[in-house]
Image (cartoon, rainbow, N blue to C red):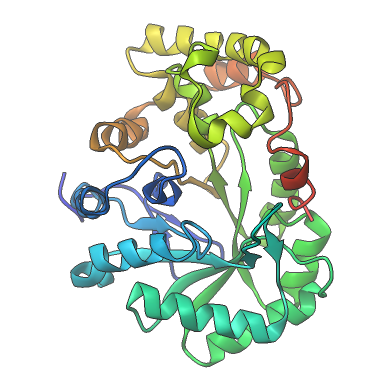
Length: 331
């Protein structure tokens, strides 16, 4: 499917940005879930654009600059066709969990570095990746707003911000989108956040919409858990079997409807409202095409309700991140 062939788009908040609701999260192109080949990644990005994908989500901490560099090379000749999103705020530490920096001077420096790596003059959607509890959100968003005034970014986003933080940020400068992990497995914080984002006219970008692979049905045993997944509580031995059972209703519905569990999972998310878009990540073209196939899956109100009841909020075993990671989300 070529770009511009009619895939429906959803507008991001009060911005002028409109995206196909299944975009591409680019983190896995930097070795997070196994080795990635840069040349193959660039081909994948080009193929995604050819198929109508126009929303690409990166961060300066994905490979600590590597991801933005690869994405920048891949989109250089097609910049006008896409919505380019990236993030700042996490800082690298030699040991222990990542740091976080929301100081105005850091915001400006991080943006300049991202612009250089991406090889662009302006970033469409610039997120604070993690909220810095030591810096007021008003200061950080004020610095982001100055980047808008300078023509370096177009619209603002927040990632893993709690409702009160979003309200305070939005009062300083309009927020176009908020990212939080959201899937059938992990709904509580996302659905609480959406009460606020919907009220304020902010779009909700669901990352890890496939439960980091769990909801595809492809991970069926502990022996198949690898890479970054192995550090996540949901994939640990004490939680794995219970979470695997939660995937069974998704697989059963996919079988009835003649599609895949991943497509059912994404279709459920997109049915939650026009304010929701998703950014599943992959390194492989067949998976990208499978994810886009979710746009052709229609769920009835009864099917949506059945899935919601089969995997109710709080049903998943284990937290979204290890303890250190959990301390940095929903701030």
